[in-house]
Image (tube, rainbow, N blue to C red; front, top):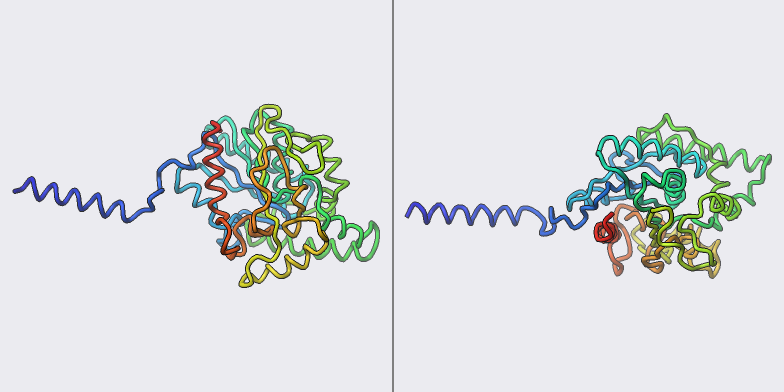
Length: 311
């Protein structure tokens, strides 16, 4: 009789334990060989007032086995300057984790920032993944550059506004010590600036106008995905402004800030998600297209892809 009660209590304990946690938690689905480092884009942050730039992504990856670090680089600076900051953080991450390499996932300007690290220290990078990355420049940056030429009052006003915004972002994200260079960021994101950067760091960049790039270069694997929509959720207060900015691309498919072809890098996972530039990081606050795969799911699937590749 005593054994029966013991067996019953054990079954009850195991049942309650299973119900208390998600079915996939701890399954190892996202447990990559090397740590994942998430890299934010222009006017970005690691975490702002408790809110992740990659909204809900780090926790979702960690819950299923991944070791995740979130980078914090200048909100406005050139690809090279941000890249040097990221390189220092990668070196610290490797020292902390004991890993030999990292998997870099960069959104927007975070993509060329990550590519810089892979270019100067390929021995420290297992893979670079571009999410809505500005890999061949942005029409929006070209337009802004044209409206605010060097030495003009309009440029001075634009620089002052950008510095004010980036200072606020970095103060509330705890990174006020990082330098701000709005013009450096703008130059890096134009078509001309991106072409100059790609000449120095060509890894994964497609040779054709809208094809795929090398899947592997200098031992680093390259991947990318992007969205092709602008207005995706009427409940999202930033969806309409994103649609307005996206008009700059005319009939060229884009996510509102980066054209589909510019976002290509290495192996293109998919380039037609119903997502705008902010949806790609599950913003605003998860208000994304109701009929598209959840952005967090994409990051989980990609972590599993990296795991399957031995990365």
